[in-house]
Amino acid sequence: MPPAPSAENRVASHPDFRSIRGSHRSFGIAAILISVGGFLLFVLLSNFATGVLNQKLFGHVTVGLVGGIGQFVVMAVTAWRYTVHMERRIDPAVDRLRAEIARDEAEQARLQQARVPQERRFGSW
Image 1 (cartoon, rainbow, N blue to C red):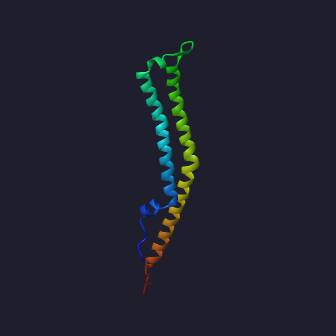
Image 2 (cartoon, rainbow, N blue to C red):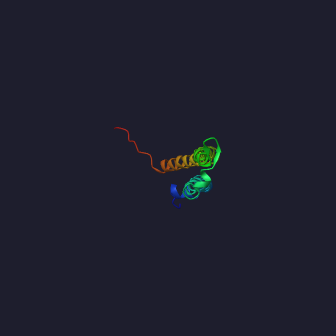
Image 3 (cartoon, rainbow, N blue to C red):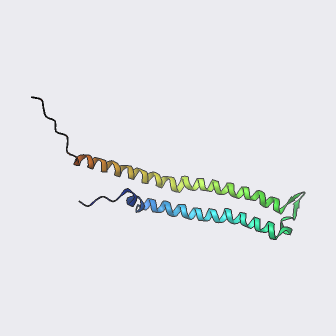
């Protein structure tokens, strides 16, 4: 009988694991581009386009102030979307994968126990 593949190889080759990695990676790239890109844009505008950020919108409120507060909004929305993404796409796949690994481990333990000969007990004379 060929040796069973290691747990790491079984997990890495599992379709749920590949979908988890792909989904997590694609969301992470998009989230980083939006949040870090927005922050970088704001920093660059504050350095090179001060005239744009100093434009008054109403009263003492400027474009720069709205942009700065907008950074908090972008980060809050990114964190909220991350939570929703994890609950809808990642967590169900992880739960299925964990359940399958637990079943496989229980089956392996049962097979291992069946292979071990039972202890012989001799009666006393």
